[in-house]
Length: 406
Length: 91
Image 1 (cartoon, rainbow over the protein chains, first blue to last red):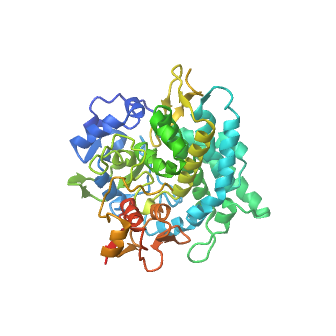
Image 2: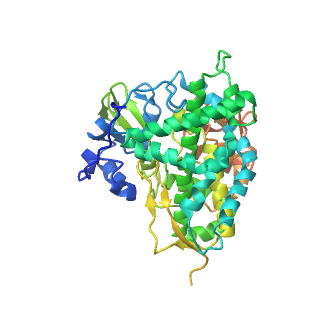
Image 3: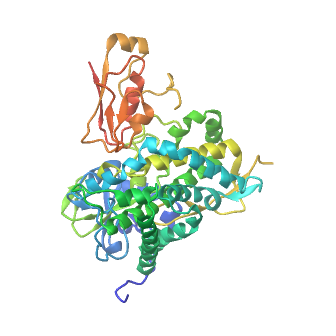
């Protein structure tokens, strides 16, 4: 493993416009003023960090790039310090470009339609209530560690047909890949290796005894020539579902609760009008979009008048696009009943998140059940809220006091 | 789904009242299948006007004609489609 890069500390950023870094602690803590500064400087900014990386700062520039797979490849989707060789079937379809992308995506879509999610909803509602049972009488809770974290991981485990009790294992792999892996390749490789071994064992079990779950579904899926998928494709897609399905929605639920904890007016409105929750979920997704994706520039082009050169990465910040005041009036405010909301939290174009219907259902159910059972809660002044770094942003510590303030 | 509020801020073109709409315009919705990416916002906001296929991609229900009283929902679906894939056609 001598060719594996060692982690290197990044110098703190002093010039955001020419030297941005999405792993800087300031970005992690409060990225919104940084995005506003970058946007007022240019629709596309560049940093020499990460071996060269652009960032579109406006909604329009983000849309242009998301819709342009000719110049922007998805073969690399995380901006990191290193660019190791690309493995085939890394995590299709998120790492696929046309024409390979469409059939790979179509395989995954049917289990994630809104109708399919309706069938899963009772299980998710039960998971939420089991979690709430565990802390509701304690008077305080870390809502990120005890609630938002476990809803998506247990839901996706249920869909895949793997034990919900393995949740902590999955959460740890994802932390190693999405956070530590930006700077420490050893961590990333170790996590990918462990995940593959884990899923390989589940695939072998199902070869002997087929099941009625997503793993068997993928094993039985056929490509357009009618051939079964290669094992590496099945493994790649399983890794994707686990990675993409967990800390993304963990973050979105956590950010939503964080907002409601400090905004009693919105909380009271949703309790009085629970029918508004699906609309509120869209606005919370806009304002606190968790996921930033990436592309690699493979052919020189121009975006919003800015030249973009091959060999650079692109930090495709859907969260920054969703704060563009040209697209969203009062972009910096949470307007809980916003009617016009073309937010890009799940991406735009062919790579629209496969799990968007799942995420939306989980968020709605998580907020409904929480507000039903815990209508009064607030941030614990004795605790600290911490946020995840890098590709997916959301609260990782969320200390709340439960019940009415004395 | 929350009820569409009559006093909500308007956007796009919309009729003043349902009655007036019935008299002055007839609407049709259309989904561009090349643009639709299956966000399914239209189905969530205007379930009467849209259908989803097995992949979750949308198309207009029937020939897209908007029944009287659902004009607001047609505009709402259009203005929440992230891919700008929905047309509301006034006939």
